[in-house]
Picture 1 (tube, rainbow, N blue to C red):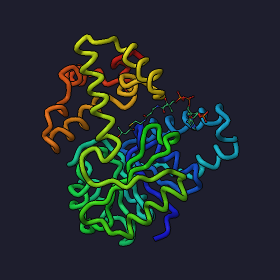
Picture 2 (cartoon, protein in one colour; picture 1 turned 180 degrees about the vertical axis):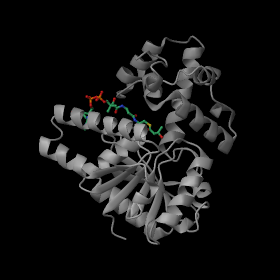
Picture 3 (cartoon, rainbow, N blue to C red; picture 1 turned 90 degrees about the vertical axis):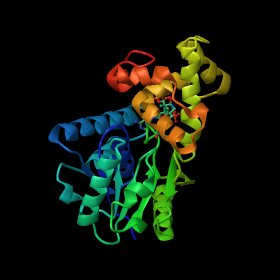
Length: 283
Ligand code: 3HC
């Protein structure tokens, strides 16, 4: 199972980062989005990040050009057919993901690996939409995917050990990430720790315990975190934080995992963080 061509379905915040990481490491990427407008938005994200990498001295002009040349953008699902590995990174909706995996099942070769970047949907539920759940696993990147050095690789009760070994080798030796294997449980390792922490910070803010700026400064300066929890929540997206905390709560039934009311209200109000222009801060 050699991986030469990687398909990525979805070019939002996570998908575009994954497209960039794979293409920067010299592989061909087929990047599929739902509409020409979504393709344009994905391209703009990748180009913006490459621009930033060049301006920070992380990439030279030749590598930027080579990265862009490695990416084929398409709205046509069938163009994913030559992929050895497809990584799905669309919104957190089981019906949509199941539909995508069914379609992948019908276009990909028998030995192609199908992976999801879901952060909170049980991967076995996605895998069982296909006729080959042994070829399905989770590969969970962190935002921004170009910078964060971790990838969680998730095995379900059906995933073949060979698939896990190929994906682990790919993430480690081709993408240069540190892999942490994780079980198919809500939150895996990172989000099971991170999202309750963020929700505690939101609850603390809601209770008037401290201002948003002070909570963030406390964790940044007191614990050496690169960003405080409310800034990070805005970066992740408050809808994603809510969905993940709800998944943790549903899975473990612990009261402390119930999302804080303020988080629900902000999501209902369309205050989703950076992507909507307003969250705990304005952008
Ligand atoms: N390409 C390559 N390198 C880049 C880059 C890019 N597009 N953008 C930034 N960098 C590099 C910089 O050169 C710098 O490298 P250096 O330390 O070697 O000089 C480093 O990344 C940090 O950059 P900056 O200091 O300039 O800070 P930025 O403002 O650009 O980015 C950050 C900061 C990397 C986002 C940092 O604040 C951070 O690490 N925050 C925490 C992020 C985090 O926790 N992410 C996980 C979220 S959880 C998740 O994703 C899971 C999901 O399921 C919810």
